[in-house]
Image (cartoon, rainbow, N blue to C red; front, side, top):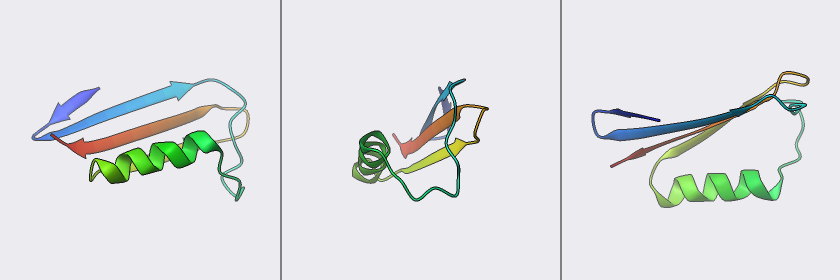
Length: 62
């Protein structure tokens, strides 16, 4: 977690199986995460690669 200026950034990373970035499937967790970012007038990003885990990041103004 980091505060840069008046923006808070939070990233969570795991070492699970990852998700194919070309997949069109969005789980409930991804949808809720993106909705949360919109409510906070921020942005959500998900980075994942099969076999290498997933990182989800949220940035929003404070």
